[in-house]
Length: 393
Image: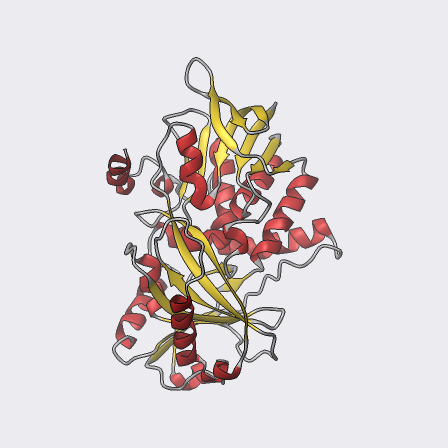
């Protein structure tokens, strides 16, 4: 019997499993697919403060950003040189307005973030071009965020799982949860799976956009929906983009609840020499077909930032589903409807960056130890979520 079963072998589940094992819990991670096979392998690896307005999610992101440098060092020490680097790169982010009209809102947003402790540096167009010489000079304003960073998301997930295994965690792939086992008081005592029952003392649902499906198999409702995003990847080239660069429209797209397609320009290089071009958001269920019109919009908007990309071949395109919450806050919480059930999900496009802070919060809550930040804004019982729970029910 395991102390905890974590459902989901993406980066959030991996981080939670590792943390709980380090707190002397016996942990099993199960996933209906493969490790890092869902959302965690279909994003850009962003560790961002620049796109978050003052409030609970920004506080969570600031906490996570303090943790990432030490985690990167710890994983390198634990796993050795034979394991690929997670490519933690504190390269900073550059946010620009592509129109004069967008300049004032961008600068006002940055000012609000500075008041919340973010290092948001309003810089001149000339200074922006010093940082990014190939940037289109026809921009209205620029803000530099030195705290923004990036990791390689699939490798980071696998590294966390490898570390978790070193701490005694067992990982099983291709195991689909079909229901929950409860005792006479309604408390969790295990899960039913397609490969048999697994007794346990607690369950953490960390299945990203599929979390609602897992909860439904338990007879519970959570208002998580898939929100699709697509990314273009260029062929390799000498590095000509040195930061994460995006237009100010990206912030509005992140915070929007509109189900219709939204695109904005997000451009950054990888350690391998490719350039990632995003970003799109739309709620179309789990439809995974590539949409050429979306890709066309991404390419067009990227050229507004970096015209030289016009001559660069595109190597591939991919899409993924992000776990969208209607009040734009992740769910990091016990579920009082079923004692022993926990949620670590709903991070939408910020799950890579927020994963390790989420794990710290889950570990503290499960063991009743000190929590670095207030967990109540991420509770299933929060007031902002109540209308959507009623709607879902």
